[in-house]
Image (tube, rainbow over the protein chains, first blue to last red):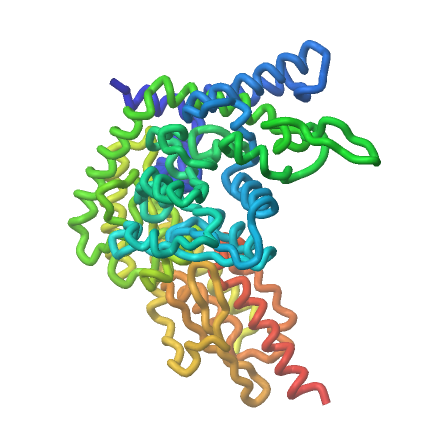
Length: 405
Length: 143
């Protein structure tokens, strides 16, 4: 049984005030706060263990390498991948998707080919594919969603043609909160021998992710959305596919032999990890995984959904409130508008009351276009949020509506 | 009519009354509600200063040596800040506008609205006001 106050005590930033009011941080879909153990792992690394990895023979470099590779193995276990060579460290989800888009398209994409994305993708899982298609003379096709924020799965089969080379879809929508039926999408795609990339940025800290069970071909996520520092993320890729794909960036670490006659590349995962990695961030990343394991991802998921239902019940009483993303399968993300009030105004007033929410298009302009709105106000919970915070938020929201209507 | 500096001082003083941020914003919202909405003919692409979060429309007219601005936004706080800008800059000569430093918004404590990443169109609008002044000066005054 988790004790919420004990958990909150692990996060130093939750004690701070903004405009002389206690901080209520409801912008976890943008980034999560970090527990002391993660912060201390990062500073501790630089205080007593810092060294470059993989090529050194001295003590510190061996320690740093061990710590770095140990984290890789922990991530492998966390997402239940088959081999740690299928775990590639990146700067984050966006870099990861760009890595796959660039490398995959070099290997497999030709003129006239097609890539299917969904209408609810974050720009980071849309723009890299647009860029790859532009490069190759290929086309992006869109799987749309309905007024509840649920994908029109029935359209998938008719979207797939013999030119479809990949499907890219998010596990969880950062704007709508919808958990997409990716296992089914992957099964259908594989029936046609089409690989699938999953943007897992918004899923990784809220639901259990088992890449073998999902059978996805690529799964990308960021550390900073799961209580780890910014600057580190993961691409999981099936070994067979990664071996057929050329490197993304060239340079040190990713090579086997370099000469002017020719250069050979390193094996997985190093082939895709050029240059010095952010070792400190990776070491701290492992602490974040430990933090989640200590509480249990299922416990976190259950608690967050409890907060979600509590918030939805209270917010539904506000006249003229409109929610976006009403699937039965969601994580604790609430996008809403109240009457004609502009989300920017709402966010600014809530901010002055100490409440951090996000407003605007949330890097999902196609979703805003779908609903014909300028943006939404988005509330997103994490393991350290409380019902008391939600009570204060709802009271503040009512005050804000009175001021702005 | 008072100088630009005098207008700015009046506004800076008006805001000093408020201690609490929420009160400052209540005042800005009042100013926003006070702003005359721009004519439909100007709520168009060519007058639009695109912001990431809220949009701004700006129209300028040159009459007897002075520039008059009309502006609007889809967000009320942005309208309030537009009102603050127009109170100071509308009805001025091109030279007055060109030479103004526009930092009083900062002095009122509204610097956050001017950050380019905030993208509410205001920073662009301020640049546009200066561009209009330059354009009108070139068109009507440099001969």
